[in-house]
Length: 270
Ligand code: HBI
Ligand code: FE
Image (cartoon, rainbow, N blue to C red; front, side):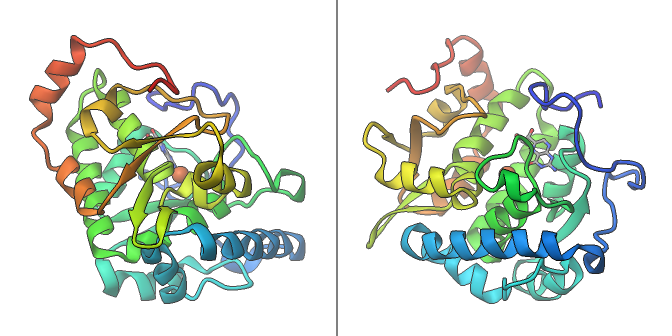
């Protein structure tokens, strides 16, 4: 599929056969096997226990509001709860979809959620985002009005960006939506989906020895490279979600021009 930044992932695993032109597929929530339901339950119980200690309060409130429980959520039922809160809906997708489609969904308050779930053998790591990563990691925060507005504004910037800048936006997504941390009155907490959906990353990000916690600066974030298949050496830390919304509403044209002349910052550099 042209235009996807899934270069490191050769053959995508989902079933793309029955997808609509916007890359969405029906979830078929009633077709998950007992084993798939058991994998969900193991992951949900493990990550909920860790999230109670290390997730930001907005995430925990979202888990509560959407009633994320013992069985794989039915997206239609979740949408009935989510849409009245922030106007967001989730749509089933077979897996990773091209950037253009992904950003268009975000710009229209639709979050793509993968419909297949990992096997028991992949509890701790898998290459592509699955239903557990997408749903448990990303969806609860869409109940928070400020974060929800950021995600839509971010999507809009993605729709506007040309191919020469899309990797810069991908970094902003990576270091916030996937691996973002936020300072709270109860200490450093996680809000990034890549952290909240992973046991190893959650412990590493908050308690890791050599981990770098850098202040969130959008231009620096967009200069900083990342690697997808290892624990992150550096995380950017917010003081308030409103910083994200402000970042997504910057005038990007002069920033892109400034960045074009600057060397990228290698992953893990201070
Ligand atoms: N597709 N389904 C799905 N989920 C993602 O998180 C995703 C994607 N396509 C592209 C993409 N992410 C990245 O390019 C982000 O940086 C936008
Ligand atoms: Fe993700």
